[in-house]
Amino acid sequence: MVSKKAQSATKKHATKKPVAKKVASKKSAPKPKNISEDDIRKRAQEIYEERIAKGIVGNSESDWLQAEKELI
Image 1 (cartoon, rainbow, N blue to C red):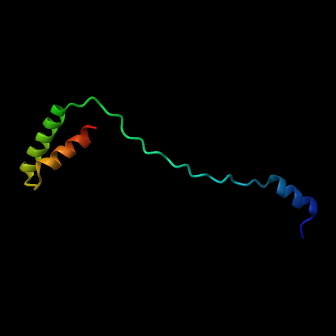
Image 2: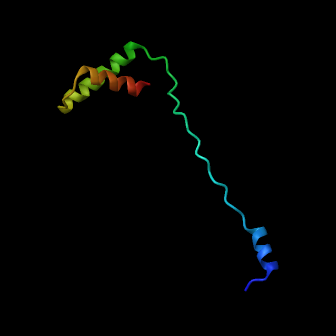
Image 3: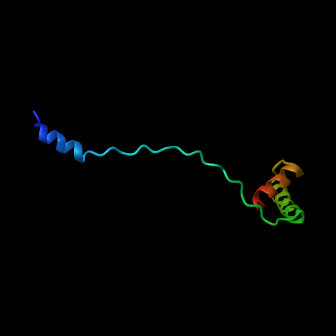
């Protein structure tokens, strides 16, 4: 059996861990860079040439979207 004095001492030293609150994080959009349409066109052309050299099937729209994603 534990004495009342020992119980109160234990309670004083026992600490409750703070419960972490989940904060909804806002996904911030990447800061837009000064990317011109010509920059995207050049990168899309590079992607196209790499894709053709590797024999990968694709289209110009996917090349363009990939270029935009990479540059932004």
